[in-house]
Length: 218
Image (tube, rainbow, N blue to C red; front, side, top):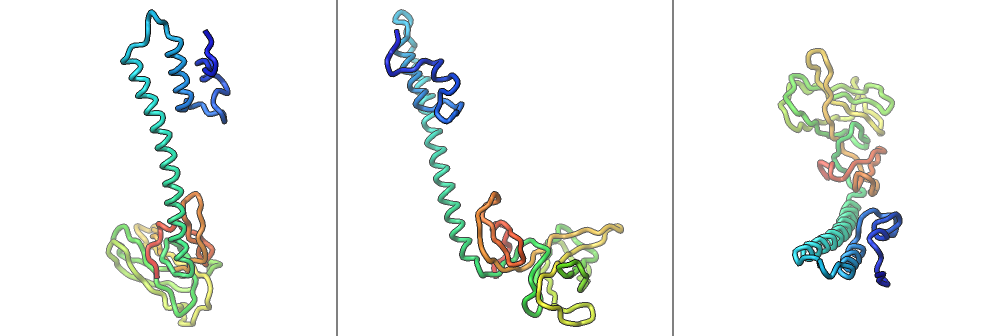
């Protein structure tokens, strides 16, 4: 017996059954299948109460998952919007971020170095944007941990360096091999944007970093 308004299991699960080409069985299709099963069951061998209750539990689970997915999507959008608005307050501020370049605008630069272990001889190199060595600073032996350092903006012969972008590298030589360390330098936030990495702070030096990598706000 064919029942109007009720689709067969083959129609519900066959190619093109779900709008948009989805292969997942939604709560509407699940309910239609269950009603069709009840109306077409053998009167001499009806479905057991336990089976019916199990199907109801499955339906409740499908509906709950759909509602949870929608709630999580709405929550994620709200959090993303909130983070973007908060990050907008950083525009115009100077922040300390992991980068090997910064803009010299005054009398010098102050940065930090992340040392995962102690160093017997730590060095900092200041270079121009084109790679020309401007100054080398010997910081000597240093213990593990974050280390703050300063460059007075002068070159090797004591002359003042012009304003502009400079590269900063920190390293030590261990067994004849040069080992680089992460340097954090100040830079000005000129704008914020949303990308695959989340909310990004776009810096005056031309780089962008996720806002969760900002070490310090000046």
